[in-house]
Image (cartoon, rainbow, N blue to C red):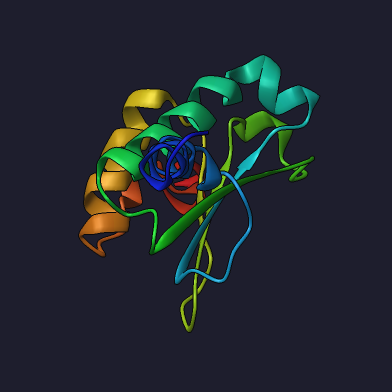
Length: 123
């Protein structure tokens, strides 16, 4: 490094990677990444959330992380959304395309995408 500008450029470049870490943000998105989730397609779902949150400019408000087994293998890939003061929302049978809709409507717009939730899948 030769200047503060180079250091700032490195910081800006790496900032998009940091969203995948735990934090104290207002919304936490957790993707089930146990063997069953991965085999059902959780990797592209996780990538879609990380990229989508960054592209939407939500990195200050939303963290994306991964967890192990959620315990409902038949519904994988599973994504849980936690918001302070609200009930957890469990999205099931997720895809990268569904993740985009959840980012737009739920994370940005505040409206749960009910047709993707566990409650809708049991109906």
